[in-house]
Length: 312
Image (cartoon, rainbow, N blue to C red; front, side, top):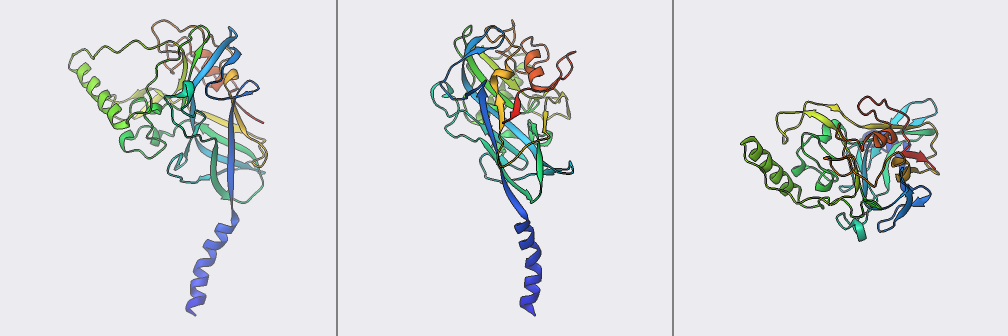
């Protein structure tokens, strides 16, 4: 009787496990038709047909779901690997820490792995960005992949959802972005500078950054009483909802095209008195073309269909 009772308890769990299917969603980055690689240069980019040499390329995706034959979005339960995936968030990392990507790390992560009930799935949905509840936590105690200082701005704004840095023909030295470093040290420095500003003391003069062109997408106009306190809201969340009605998880991959992202941008110049490239600031003249490519509104410019991601 006891064996039958234990079997009755175990069977629902066994059936649920058997009814689930493991899924690996493959991502790739290309520059036009060429595959992305650290140290490689690419011609014909942007409005000036410039030559670029990327030095970083990574982005967060979240809320991944497959769309079934009835049009229902079924969430993918991500594998909690302790490195690249946490809760419903994953970091896709295409830089390998070599050559011009020396400020990165050696690890690569080009797929999202999880499981969901077996079924007939025909589409894909995901968000480019970090969910609000994860975007403004304490980064010094965050689980990986939210513990990378290179992907973090400040608590008020949260994380860089997308981090792309490059040199170009007109700006031959890539922007001098900080390396991985210690998240605790970075936050301590940020708090020190904020305290100095509050007390009226000028912060130490920082060395001039190199030129280059960067694309750092993240939330802006986030409301909080301090740079080191999480906000109650962000006027411009800047998360991108991506939907593909047709996607075969066994054959297709999601491709991010850097050439398409920079199609309407002059990467050889930088708007005066702004950060290198587009870092999501509302007054940055380098951002309209970038935001259009992401499918996001910018100022009075309405949102259009995104062109950064395709299915191949």
